[in-house]
Image (spheres, rainbow, N blue to C red):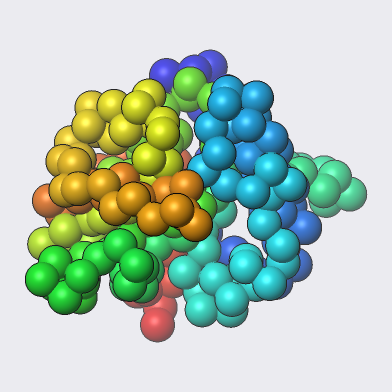
Length: 200
């Protein structure tokens, strides 16, 4: 694992409205990097607030923070990574025969470039897989760019199976993947959402 994760303790929490600028910056930086790699999964400038604010309001967007940032409250450190996890199956991709309610769905998974290669994407996918299991659902699902074989291979290496590719002319995404839910532990970060569930 990358030395960043050894030197900087990380914590996963739900995003709050004040986090919106940092999330938008992270997603825009990731989108720009994807475009330099020839991948058109996301809009080049990232997403507008109208696409991200509902995820924050619905409490389904999660942020991975470098906990050392709290030592200097004047520093507006962006999140290290972000992931949205919900039960919203894209109706253009997942059909009634897929039993859309049998899964949680990953969206907006992004890791800041300085943390690339640290294994945080893997850890967040494992966390999402465990969350689906805790919710009593058999599957964790996602969709990704049809024209990105490298990303598709990454998901295969992480235990996802290619379900099919839906080729819609107005969507760059459409390669559908799923993975059985199961209990997986991660030591890459502290999960602050567990305490939130216990106190609820």
